[in-house]
Amino acid sequence: MMMHRFLLALVGVLANWPALAGERWETLPPTPAPIVADRAGHAQVNGISIYYAIYGHGSPVIFLHGGLANTDYWGNQVAEVAAHHTVILMDSRGHGRSTRDTRPYGYDLMADDVVALMDSLDIPKADIVGWSDGGILGIDLAMRHKERIGKIFAFAANTTVSGVKDGVEKNPTFAGYIERAGREYRTLSATPGDYDAFVEQISRMWAEQPNWSDAQLKAIDTPILVVDGDHDEAIKRDHTEAIAATIPHAGLLILPNVSHFAFFQDPKQFNFAILHFLGDE
Image (tube, rainbow, N blue to C red; front, side, top):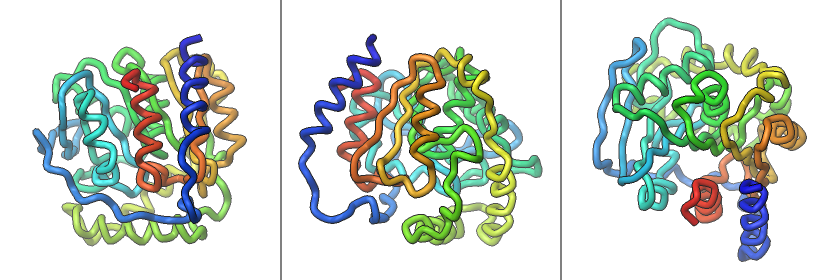
C-alpha cells in the first residue's frame, strides 16, 4: 500500500513536469567533473583496491554505476542526495580508479565487493541506488545479502541476458558512451593500457549473466523500485515490466523522454525519483 501511494504521488508530479524541446533521450551530456569529497580513499578489500568517496550526513546510500563507467557519472546526484543522506560512491572492480584481480567477472563477486567495502567503512546497512550493472548488483545484494540492504532503486537493470536489446552497441548514443568510457578508463585507471582486455573480460560476464529465475526474484522481500527510461537503448521495456511484476511488492517507474543515461539527461527528474522513493520528498 505504501509503495502504491508513492507511485501515485510520483506519477502526478511527472505528469506535470515541464515539457522540454528536442529529444533529450538522444543526447549524451558530458560526464560531470569529480566532486571534492568529505572523505575519499582506497579500501584494500576482497583482493582488490576499491576507490570510494563519501559526502554528506545521514542514513547511508551507496551509488553503484553501470558497466565501463566510474563514480564521476553520479556527479549530478551527489549534492541533492547528500543533503539528506551520507552518499557513498564506489568504483566497481576494474572500473575507474579501482583495481581488479585475475578472478573472472561475476555479479556475485562484485556484490561481495560492495559488502566488503561496507565492512571496511563500518556501514552495517545501506540503501542502494544502482544504474545498469549497478542496478543488477542491487538485486544481487537483495538476494544474497538482504540483511545489509534497505531500499533499492534499480535503474536500467536486467535479470536475464535476454532482457538486453540486440545490437545495442550500434546505437549512436550507446556507441558514444562506450568510446567515452574508453577515454576515461585510460585517464583514471591504474592500468591505462588494459582497456581492451578489461572490456573483453567483463563482456564474458555480460554474455552469461545475470540469468536469474522467476523463483529467485519471487524470493526477494527487500523494498525495490524498478526504474527505466522510456527510450532505453539497452533494456527491453517488457523485460523491465516483468521484473517489477515478478519481485513481490516491487514498484515500477518509467521516466519520460530519457534513456539509459537518464541521470544526466534529466537529473532533476532522476533525483526527485530517488529522494521520493527514499522518503525525502
